Image (cartoon, rainbow, N blue to C red; front, side):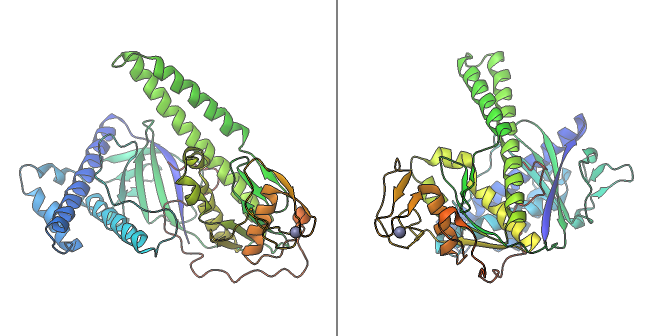
Length: 408
Ligand SMILES: [Zn+2]
């Protein structure tokens, strides 16, 4: 399966200028292609084929005075930009048709120089390489210094160079790795992602976010307050803005680190893991949206999924239709909705005393066909786990990484 390894890189002045040029060209090609497709749609024409689009917005455009500078950057990154647009459209249409899981995907939008994250991607045929001196040599940019925080398990196929909102640069390599199956363990677990706790497990564990994450969040709030007090257009405001961007990046890193630690631990400790799929989307459409997005469940669940595939564990998503908070996990009787402030309740049918969050987590596990019992959710012997899903093991989305490495 494919994994992503990300390292901080330190381009020098001329290299930063070359990267800025490349980011700009990629953006222009993307926007030109998007404009062409939108125009075709408005005129009731078929979407132009990728080959024609490439000819029009890259090959032909380079010959015009207005776009001659496209020749200054690697042709591969321009092609990859068109590939990104294709993917964005494919996801959008799949989302419209309902054939794609996960949150609804919006129609591709024009890129802006003000976007907080800029990136270019070099495929294998772009002649990039890691030099004998351990620099990352990129066509038309040069040999960029890399901080190697770990070893790549095999030769990477592509590298994406990213600049984040805090002005940091990263190189993200895609590497093919063999899954390593961990020894079989007995426990299986259902996970309820909630707002009170980050996650509640069917074995009764309640998990709040890590202290280092809370500290980073506190610092971000402080910097945001400081920014709001600075006069518009002042030098101090600009300085404060950079500080806020940096604090944002630190929160993102800390959150990713927390998700990595937790997902690795859950996958190591359990043979099968079940989560509720669309609850996150359902909540995100309500006014709870902000804290839901802050909690970053989607990226956490994606980590669980790829780590399950990597380590030979079972991963199950259950649908939203299961009313996990209304059903007694001991006897299965549906007791009706309960207001959010009701944290503990007693089942009128069987008398079981149920913790709202743990009960929901147990129901998630049960709905996924995992054999956990209600009270403190001990695993019954003879557990049955559902067959591993087909697509496990082939993950190509950008979410993957390896524990401990910040991915912008
Ligand atoms: Zn009951």
